[in-house]
Length: 280
Image (cartoon, rainbow, N blue to C red; front, side, top):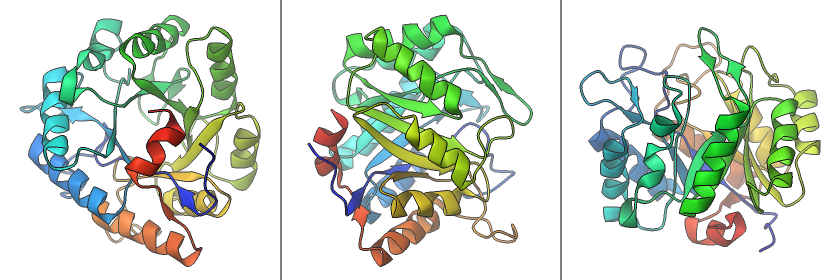
């Protein structure tokens, strides 16, 4: 399926691993509130959701498939079309058995996508370790389970590693990339860095752009203007304004982007429209 010039992928990231209720009361951490906010965003017009789960007691990130099952089941009870991606992040746990546990979900709880960070990187206060072995084991299991990889790239080197995975036939087209800018140790949120990353994408790639913190809106808007999709939500940015005086809600972040895209004559793909485009 060819990409439509007036459509884009809107990838909603409601929770992430960092935001807490102490940082912002608006971040959803328990399954019922994650489900509620995902369904609300779906009604507004999101194409897909990128899920992180939290432990029910500690509210810290968890890899447990049972919690993902509850979240996915709650979403699909009311919306069977939304494209669902789960996290296999290694920021808090790095054993393959833990990171890949969520890929064992079956039936109505099986995700459409799972995230795959393409190299190790440093965040402000924490490392995300992704060894070459891990980055090959995860897509191999995704392929076995018929779950598509959501390829997360924070700099040019990660795009080169994606080409290596293509050569090894561990990932297959169409390739869906999230280009995430603005992290302290990676590509920054400016036009040159973004342009270089887009230029290095392999053929048959569909791409969305996100940014850490305040540049989220700027990078999202640039991406829509130049034919890309967006990654948006409280996972990457908890503020609504540049001066950090107003805490954002997921609803307001999504609504703002849809209004901006409408002013450009564009709108998000529906999940039904995006499935053949993304190879789901």
